[in-house]
Image 1: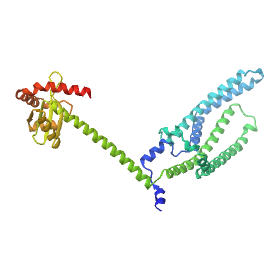
Image 2: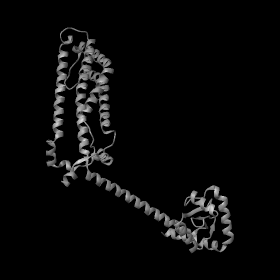
Image 3: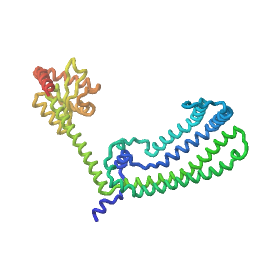
Image 4: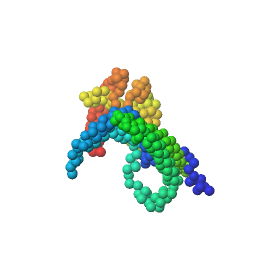
Length: 372
């Protein structure tokens, strides 16, 4: 019983499941949508440009038939009038063909949401499984698609039958008419047939797409077990990223504390904040923040400063402002230049012995950094 509950797909698909399905090309799509879009584009092209195209074809046909007795037919050669006729017909059909191609691309893009599906191009060995292929032949989707194809055949046959009845009753086939009437006849016949096909096939396409939408959504549903497993994986990824960030912070903090040994001065609060500064004349445009911290980290900075005999100066407002506004590795803010300059001048006067050794210490630290 527990296994049955585990396999029942009763949960809505998650965002990740929908994204993965889209990349694999598993989205609702119906070939009938493309057919309807193509017919609609042809209908629009015919309604806009068929009058001129029909006139060109009829005029050329009239000229061709009136001079047909003068055309010389030789073996292996195509008569020039026939080439001209092919060119006239091609010019008349170019707008229709262009419109149907654009409509087919638009239909595919609307169904896929204009999203790329790169995984569709990969090799899927599971599709080569004969057992699975045999099962797909008798699936519910195949039965429904067969019924849709049968409805399409009936719809197209019915439209053609109605069109043929109307065409055969046209005066063109029973009484003499003017040549110009041929263009009108072609236009009206095409528009009538295409409009009926678009209407009938549009209903079938809507039903087909609705079924595909329902079936695709049902296939993408997840069991509770799958939802839980996906959440576990997402949490695992979050934990890994958090661990990486913690490790990066520790490494940065370790490097920051290591630089305290070559600081010019450590400005303290005295208990809550500590900020280590360095300034090398001719190299730094302003004092640089080497390390900063509060509470436990501030105590570690002061302990390292004491171990390396780095001068420490208690200045509560400057220490607080440096900790709040300065960034490690960056120059101090401009509004603190005057206050920090006074602190540096004080330590330069009172700790000359320290600065005699500081240059050598910095050179040693730089050489160690190069070796690392």
